[in-house]
Image 1 (cartoon, rainbow, N blue to C red):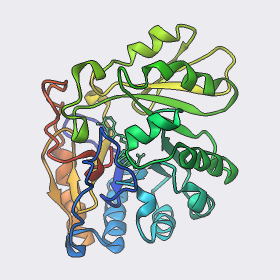
Image 2: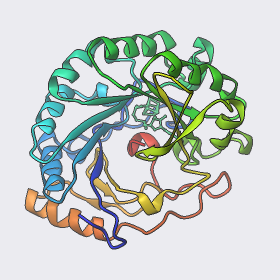
Image 3: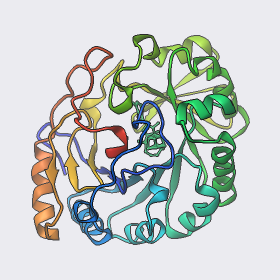
Image 4: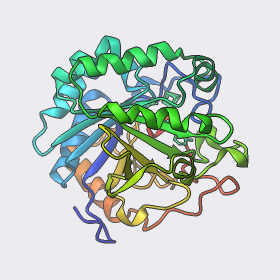
Length: 317
Ligand code: SAM
Ligand code: SF4
């Protein structure tokens, strides 16, 4: 359905857990988070009702996220049930990939159509540093498992951090030369663990084009990513600029948190609870939330952090 600013809202990101097996510095606190009581979180039935209500209002694409969605018990079954909801045309997942060797095949069979895998560095030491708990080899094994399971057009999410991984831009873009993958550089956002990062670490996606001038614009977008590619390459490069540009005018998303809060805008603290509601009530609340979606986010930079009021693991990106 259309919101008050004539934007067609067709995409809902659904966070299924706040928990994660990693502790990325820009996302979560080192000590992890206190596990909330079971009663405060959406049950699988409630999540399904929320997706059905959203589908009735014109949501066509669902992205499962977290925390790490693959640590959620029953995730495959939940995906299979969402994939069957009439009106849902695309079911995607964003994951750190480390558990894909165990789940990739089942996710494919459950009807998950696309995977985005987060990978900020190709250096094992730096991977350990940024994720605090992770091993690069696990994420790489996840990528291979996804390919083997038949996931096509995999996307790699790379959060660009000045002084940390900008020296690997070339190595990541090179991956797209022979493989049909999309490497997406995402500007670090001052949200969650990203608040308090040094100003120099917030680099714009322009850096990618400066370092790799051979990339040519494809003059089109894939969601929020502006697309580029090397001439004749199998894959492509996406630039996502949540800080240096705002894409509010074309925003087609709403978000549902694992504790049932509907967030019409990532960077606003506006939240409406779906927890405990019936499906028709959820539909009513969703409709209102879509109508009330803010026109634009507030200013966003190192000095003016997000007003989201939650860490990223509690929203899902
Ligand atoms: N655990 C999964 C993963 O890492 O892909 C899904 C959840 S994670 C919150 C979703 C996406 O948000 C990841 O690609 C992650 O890199 C990104 N993210 C988290 N905090 C961020 C920040 N401060 N700025 C930019 N992207 C961020
Ligand atoms: Fe976990 Fe994803 Fe956040 Fe990293 S970005 S801590 S993998 S939820």
